[in-house]
Amino acid sequence: MAFVLDASVTASWFFPDENDQDAWEAWRRSEKEQMWAPLHWWFEVRNTMLVGERKKRLSKALTSRALSRLSVLPISIDPRPDDNAVFNLARTHRLTFYDAVYLELAARRKVPLATLDGDLIAAAKAEQVGLVTAT
Image (cartoon, rainbow, N blue to C red; front, top):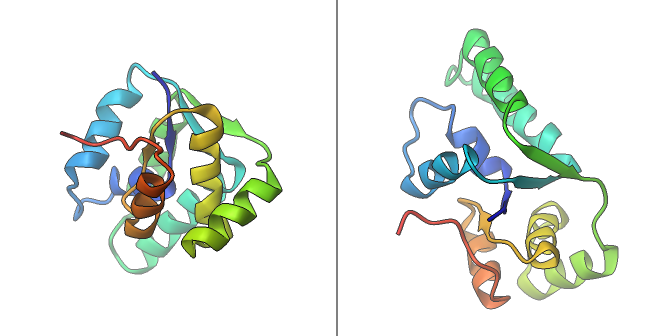
């Protein structure tokens, strides 16, 4: 089965001070399952790593290794969401447009969402979109 990968899960894989079981479940699944991400995921992950470097949570070397590892994972980038659906989800659940795009993608592809964002988890549950969890 496939799933949608958000930046919070992706970044947590590479920050040494993070250890979330749901994120590690997504990591385990990443080795054998197709992953989908919206176009902005690419930028969001890299910005999170850059901020992590500035806050001394990551080194340049670790960022480089992380990006190298990500480049070989089966992550397909979905180029453009359904604008109306994203606006509706964002308005209904008071999400940022960026976060609503992850939810729209998971709903449209009928696959679970891997996220650590509490508001996005609540919205996914309300929309009956599955979540990648360790249990």
